[in-house]
Length: 498
Ligand code: GLN
Image (cartoon, rainbow, N blue to C red; front, top):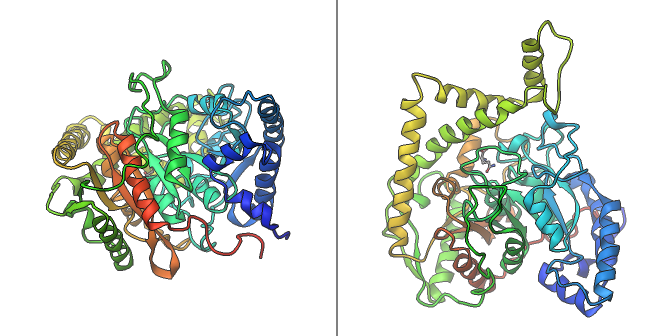
């Protein structure tokens, strides 16, 4: 295997913001940058397995076009020539899109997701599609129908999930940044496990058009990056109203970078007890305490008194609502309209049954069954309706805390990345999202930033939850912490060169 030269390594550790400056200054070209990342993918992805599809040829063509614009001084689009990657749940015109499922093994979409079109308009170059748990259901990327992805910090561990490929690709320096999706934690938990930044925007901030739906009232697309500054840049490119998604806020998009220098002075930070409860590993708890001390020592006022008694209900509420919505969303995969289709059975019904039996994996089937049960006549009131009521209570508790505080701080996940194959019990897997799900239930923006290291030198994520549409403030606070802590976002050594 080839080892990288110093200048290649410099390019690999570039951020979007630095890349933009270097491209504009003519210090580097987009073709050089894109080739460097493609070489990196070739050298490391046998081990990391972040990519389902690499679109090298298209990427190099786009890079050549970007270089033309740059040389003519026409590169006004903010991400011109910068290579990124996309979770394989986002529709990409002409490029295979599988959502990690055999059901979509051969799907070549005829259109782009809104975010994909916006990134192209912003000049970004897609290097390909990233691995994920099937239909975004999972916390380890082990539920991908194709292969598990490895954690670049320790290849025997999981990268988290469901956007494990998107997180691993940033930590392994295969892309400068990537997009993922977060229904119950699928951006923040893998960001925590892989030691990078992951942002779930406010529900409705980013269009979901062309995002293969899991649970439509919870799903949201967001960035993985090395820095909070880059998260703001990527969000800027994808956010905003979309006539193709009626759940998108019809509000002008603010400047998400406006408060990056705000600092922490006088900031009111709530640390509600329910986010620091049982089930958190000691190494995570002590790492988070150290992070809170750093915030306090730099002007933030940490208030541990708020209590949010309904928050522990968020996980059970999620496991009623998300499966219910998924059972409806995944009903379209019947083997007739598109995707995998069994043929030659006794009847149309037999073919549909066979298509769903072979097309879906175990976890997806489990969720569909759970959801169909919760929605069935006789159980609807007891489960689905009850869960909706508790959802309202949880939202109100967040509103109460935000009436007195600027931001909520919490761990992202209760543990560091676990070993591949270690968790086989689905319920134990579900507990990974105990601290991330509340923000989805309430539709609030939340970010995971590197917060230090726990057992075996594995990364620990620190989570900030912001007010509805409060991304600018949230990013400012997260950036202030990042600047103070300066944790590395890339594992020591050079993944794939040994
Ligand atoms: N791990 C959670 C689940 O399995 C969350 C998934 C997600 O956010 N897409 O449902």
